Image (cartoon, rainbow, N blue to C red; front, side, top):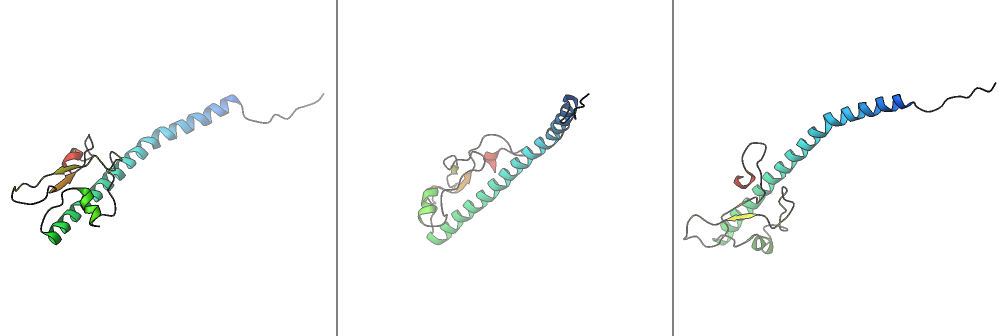
Length: 127
C-alpha cells in the first residue's frame, strides 16, 4: 500500500486565518482613517497659518492688502498656489475682504472652502 503525505492547509485552517485577519483589519482600519483625517486637518491649519502670514508680510511691505493668492505667488510671498488639503484643489479657497472699506486690496483673510466639520466640531470654513 502506498501512503501519501498530505501537504497544504485544510479549509478550516484557511477560514480561521481569514477570520483572524478580518478581525485585525476591522480594528485597524478605523484608526488608520481617523489618523488620515487628523493629518489633513493639521496640514490645513499649517497652510492657513502660512498664507495668513504671507498676507500680513505683504501688507507690511507694501502698505496694502493683496488682491488675490496669485499676487502673493507673483511677488514671491508664496512659492505656488497652495492646495487645500481637505478638497485637494487650489481653487476652493474662500477669500475674506477687509472689514474696513478704507483699506486697499481685496484679501484680508482666507478660509478653506471644504464642506464639513473638523474633529473639534467647528466647520472647516471657520478655521
